[in-house]
Amino acid sequence: MKKTHNSQNDSAVSPVIGVMLMLVVTIVIAAFVATFAGGLFSTSEAAPVASIDVKILYNSGYTGNDCVMYIENLGGDSISTSDMRILTYYTSKTGSKAGTTKGDRTAMNTRSITVTNSTGATGQKIVVPILLNAAYGDAATDNTAINFGNYNFAPGTIMSTYCNEGTAYILMGQTSSANQLKYLNKYDGDTVNDGYTDFGVGSTVHVEILHTPSNSVLYSKDVIVA
Image 1 (cartoon, one colour):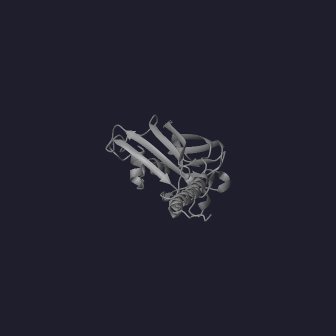
Image 2: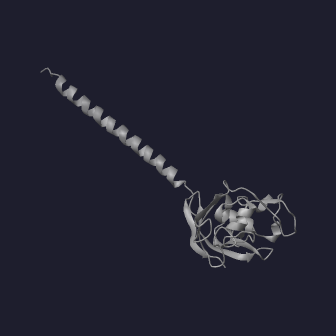
């Protein structure tokens, strides 16, 4: 007996096979995209862990009369200063510049300041906070190894704003030498509370230190000026 061919069944099966193939292709593409995206996220840098201490001393530095901020790595990971961001917030209740002043410094947006170093050499350009380590030498234009962004913040390392000018720049963004002293209340010739602000011993500065590649907060505390 001759077997007949059912063209209607064949035409019904073809779309089903097409749909199944499309589903398989879609699933394969989705799996590939998920794997690729997962690989991207897994390569992001992990947040370092470090115990950090911050001090702001109103009468310190090599002169004994400069306001200096010290940042110390008490232990943990070594962090490249090129990956660090230092944020500060200070609110003055009195003075002609009363209000909140913000400092925001990274190695990319921090400019050099001009100082007189402990040997009496004038016109020395440094990028604060510098590496405070006698083995690396004093603040000097040609001593770039101590400049912020050029060294690692390793355990036992202390960073320093070095002098009045460095502290006023980091805390308040001031670049003019006269303004730097006035913002810190260190300028004797000014008539408003000896300065533009009421900054001094007992003042509170909120300090945050961030690790920019991982966008993590390494330190966030109120620091009392001593």
